[in-house]
Length: 310
Ligand code: G3H
Ligand code: 13P
Ligand code: ZN
Ligand code: NA
Image (cartoon, rainbow, N blue to C red):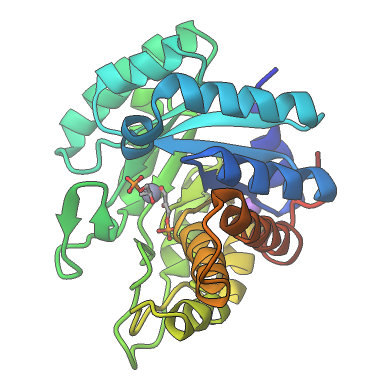
């Protein structure tokens, strides 16, 4: 059966590593991730955004993830990514998810607390855990476009009150990461506010922190996409060494979507460009799925440190 993130976060916190939270939208992505996790014996979080639910439909995604459970013996959590309101969280809790995020970060502190608390009460009554968020990420956070200038880092002096008044099980913070494949301007030196993460960690001892917008934007896949007709100038991600450092600290969940999209697209572009007469989707989705598996393996082993921890 699916598990919550409680035990995996406790072990990750104690062990100084992080669990990978990978966004899923279709069968090949679910398979690529879970095959990698199986071979590396890693716990894993599969997360579904509102957009993913709209694209694939709730029931298909739940059944795909349940199918992956038949194939593995791993602790797998099914998580709602960026729940916008109580209703979507309730729908996922009622519909078999083991974890939900209520993203109230665009609201005032008080409104964020009230909304998050309401979700926590419903979730906990149903055995589901909740991730909240304080601070705003730069870039595109679902449909809300937060410009880099408006991005506001998490204020460490707010985190204790937020956690104690809401009862959330984990907290996403903003320390300079952002969603998508264009995280820094060309020539800009990637930087994260580790001082904020450290201060948050001090104020919330033994409490799991979540890092969104944590793709590294592998230049290997960017180059393949460009080589085979794609346009992706100035795609830049978070350096892996920074993610390793975050994983050693209080960060227990690292969210990755863009890196999967790039790997998948690189596989398809390369295949179709090299085999122009082929039109069987299984043919071009096979390298795409293999790329997902390779990326996830690399993350589990070399970045997150969660290989062998299942
Ligand atoms: O946080 C954003 C995730 O990458 C999900 O993106 O809303 O386009 O599915 P999406
Ligand atoms: P990336 O766009 O960096 O992969 O971030 C994904 C994410 O935070 C999903 O919630
Ligand atoms: Zn996110
Ligand atoms: Na950690």
